[in-house]
Image (cartoon, rainbow over all chains, first blue to last red; front, side):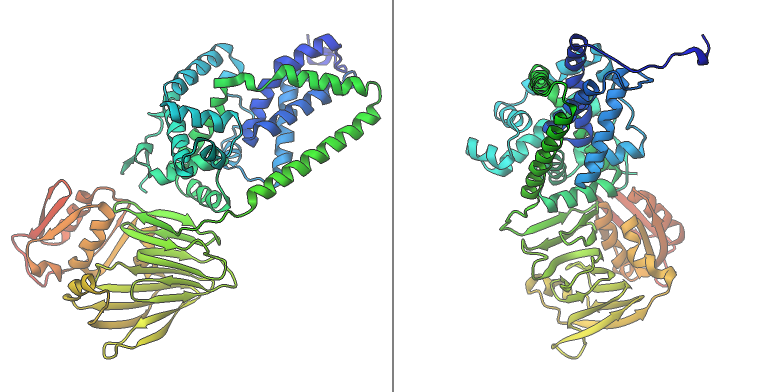
Length: 188
Length: 362
């Protein structure tokens, strides 16, 4: 087959196939958007929007790569637009751009084995946190609660909440294998 | 090089970066976190790792990103408007309008400054220095063994910081005059770059202006106890020296009684680094005494230096040290051109005369 013989046509799908595309991509696209936005709710919106767009344009879209990379690219563009529009400066995004990591996917995103391993490591690290620390971390991560709200609910000080979260995240960071990496020779 | 891993990072920096990563930081904290991240590789790396960790921690309850629910939402919304892309477009516009309003409101709420009743104090221990951004955008590099303090209303009606030690200021332009208050002097400024060195334990006070002009207020003459004012212009340095016995006076009541020298000097561009080199870990000594040098070294390397003989105190030395992380390396270099000897025991360094010591050498 030569380059000239590749047929490019509009991408099409049916409801049944699209359901499985939607369900198998939704979480991954949300996580990918979240790398740029650090905001799960808005990341979910963007994942949904992108998938909805794909459904609306079925039969008319010319996709030269794969659906998956097309979706990732669309999510990336939407995130960049969102950042520009909202004037949110995210140091992580600047870092990714500087180091040309924007188009890279973390290994656990593409490799189910790594994904399982990562999930297991995280489960272990969180489950071995001191009880209060774990509770505070979960409230912050999964209940969208502000530090102030957590402090009020648990009747502890906001400083204590901050400390718990700092400790939890630090422990997670270390258990994810960053310990050795972090030795840097920088004078100040 | 100092091996500086993240376990040595200041707890306060870790908390600050954690708050930034978890989106719990207020405007001021965000500005500070960003500055830390952009000015230190170490902080940047810590931030990147923490950000990624925060992202990955979602895997603990990955099910809370609910693709079943998302699909049924999608399905319901497309069912209702099947075939009418036109309507769907309106729906999308309306939805995105709602999202924008919602997020705008969210960010509006986020952006509202929260009332902080306490003052902020930044303590920089010996052996390190720190770069920060004040709420008004002023950049400050704080040298080892110094404290910078400002009140919660900083930037509202006044811009006053209290400095104990040495700091390099790059003042952000603004209507409100920027004031640096040290324990004996007040430095007033509008939109300039300058360095202030006011360690209470030192026998000197110095302020050097790189850009603009500052006014220094306090006791400035040898023969009068009254407070006076002096202007220090661009490329000038104001230096005050005190007699040695003042050391004890300062500790008893914070009042200098014995100024022995006041001078305003013009400095050439090549001399600037004598005053500001420290911000880039460059120590430049231009014919200053061992007495002064040891004070600088003690703070830079977090050590204690003892001189066995008082003749050594007045011995003058010229030389510069760039990125030398180990005090022994610096001492070895000094030993090459000066007839001194030293002994290091942990954090204690003893300097004594060499065999051929002459009090007028160098």
